[in-house]
Length: 446
Image 1 (tube, helix red, strand yellow):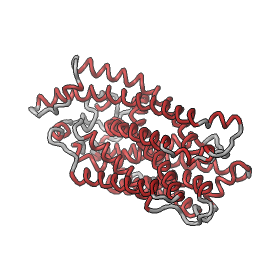
Image 2 (cartoon, rainbow, N blue to C red; image 1 turned 60 degrees about the vertical axis):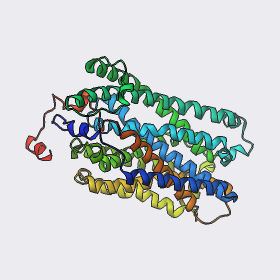
Image 3 (cartoon, one colour; image 1 turned 120 degrees about the vertical axis):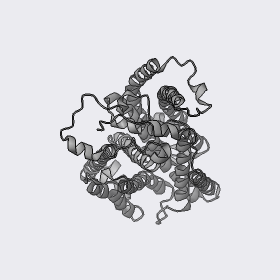
Image 4 (cartoon, rainbow, N blue to C red; image 1 turned 90 degrees about the vertical axis):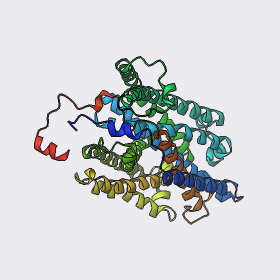
């Protein structure tokens, strides 16, 4: 924990002239264009197998990027509930990630309404009565629309409360420094009643909303994991699967928060605010989620394997021992658990941003592979069971790059005219009751 009072002046001075760097803007748009072309090629190419591959690629990337956006945002609410100080350094980025939630929401609804629902076996087969009710198409789409809609609405209210207080305080501080104020700020702080009152109101609102959002996230993402992912294999069911997904979504959010923070702190003017110990903190939590992912993965695998459960063993065997996906499953275990668990044991590595970003970049790829291994084999076994080649080519890679480009564009476009850190949050200030056990060591780290 840092004992220094944060200096926001470099961040404030970066705001008036900040634009998204042309290479980032053009690169993200180029990746988005690649994704559009790959999607059109997959969905409209006229080949039934290509269509199924495109459907699998979309579901994989929805589960991946929607998880990153929502899981990354959740760190802001967790920090509020736990009154933690270090998550405040990543809070503005967490809020920026929430801006991608509506994008994935619109894409999912469009995908389902335009025929994506045909990827699911229950849309074609006769299901047992209890499953037939649950998988009624209208009920299926309605609960996703309502559930994800509620989560998005809650996130936007939270972000708006945080941003209003920040912009009001930042405007006052920038006026003292003689800096130009972005024009759009005026409309965002109409009826401003003073910094103290507005900050207190915002903190109270966010503290009230945070536990509601966290509970809603657990419930709604449990539903999403079952409906969008697990129902691709409607005769497979695992009680731990929903928790496995919504906890790993937070993990993926932490990974991308660290990547964006390390690579974007200079652009945001927050380099002086991001001390090495804050990367150490998020690195420790990332390491903890890595262990939790390994534990829950094995906890699901073990009883299915030894119990040789008819409904579930085929699901596992097709992924771990099948000739199409077996090798990739082993690679996924290395990227998601074996390698990061071994490397992130190092305390010093987590405090070296340039090295740490490469490690979490590997984890980011590993989590994408995990989403692929969970979803694509279900589509492959039902629609493409005669194919013996791994369906990983232009459609899958191109669509993934498209989602990535769109994600980068949305996040950076949101951040370009906002304070790069939460200037109004009281817990950005040092803890007056905190005492360093080894003051000389602490000073050396600053």
